[in-house]
Length: 148
Image (cartoon, rainbow, N blue to C red; front, side, top):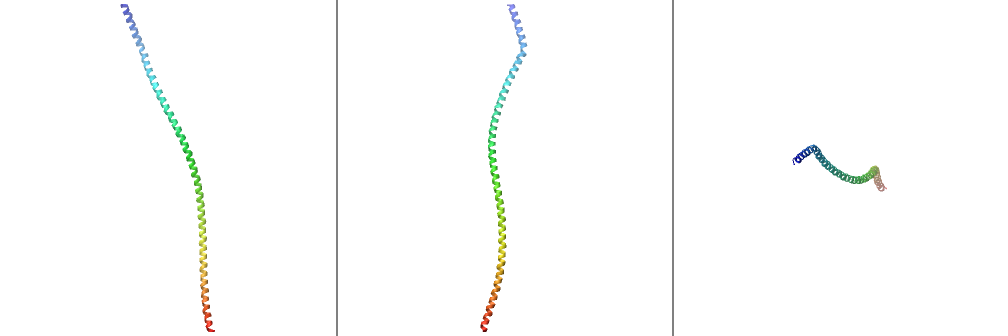
């Protein structure tokens, strides 16, 4: 029994010694487990971020397509506005030309009116002279008739 106790005691000492020698390994194993857990958590976080980034990329691509369509519509609108602007410029040029022609016509009409007024005044003066001459002739003719 004593030998068994001594053997058991020796085994206990050996086991204690082996446990003490394994303690750093177990501590390293514990750190390794923590590192593995941290790595797994980091992987999960990275995958989650990658999924979010992929979702954002899809949204950005979709938004980009929408913006491209809006840009195409805006280009068409700008082209329409440019064409309307060209037409407006052409109409403004036509209107300016028409105004110039109208001003020239008004000037010619005014000159013609002045000339006509001058001629009318001259004709009135001539007519008044002829009337006076006629009146004088009538008076002279009336005197002559009395004298005869």
